[in-house]
Image (cartoon, rainbow, N blue to C red; front, side, top):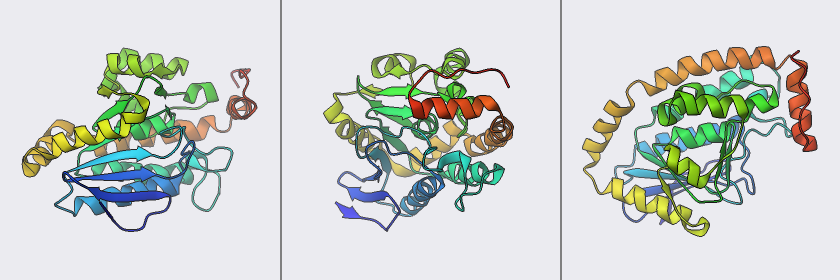
Amino acid sequence: MSSIGSFQDLGVTLEEGNIAVVEIQRPPHNFFDVDLINAIADAYETLDEYPECRAIVLAAQGKNFCAGANFQGGGGAARDRTGEQGSSGGGHLYRHAVRIFRAKTPVVAAVQGAAIGGGLGLAVSADFRVTCPEGRFSANFTRLGFHPGFGLTTTLPEIIGQQRAALMFYTGRRIRGEEALEWGLADAIAPLERVRDAACDLAREIAASAPLAVVATRETVRGDIAERVTRATDRELEEQTRLRATKDWQEGVKAMSERRVPNFVGA
């Protein structure tokens, strides 16, 4: 095992079997902001230049894979690097998100605990997901008075179908690990303590195939996914900017911080 580069709140190591582990290091919940998404994109692009890395495992320290944007800390899609409110924040974050989709190396996400909101978007950006019975997947945006983001309006229906994606979007309900496996949202399930090991096993299985053939096949299968995500995030950001000015958005964020059911008024 050898470390690669220096990335903010991110560990990147080359492992045996021609795989790398990219580990998010913001435990326990691994909330994201533009800096974290930028770091992940940088790590992927760096690993694309290492021929000995044929597959990546995206993992996280702590209780949850990624519980969403850091709203309470002022991070996430609500603000940009300077902390200013407005469309530039989400736009900046989404530009880095698109870079994640442009990377060439296959990715397996090891999803322990929760993948919520933009954290679900990050998990879905991977080619495959390994989870556990305790895993939780939720597109909870409308429960915040918000519009889905991170390209999920394109990526999630492609994985689980339009109907199930709409159900997740409209209700914000949480899908547990076994149901995620049944829906195709997860590709494998393992005991909680073995999620990362199982993801590494899958990554090594991918890495055992001819690397040039895998990359070429992946490009054919995924097609113009980065361009589709770009179009999706443009639309998502437009609606997020509009909805951020509503009372329902203020109520949704307040209710989340107070751990209560929101009282939306449609304004």
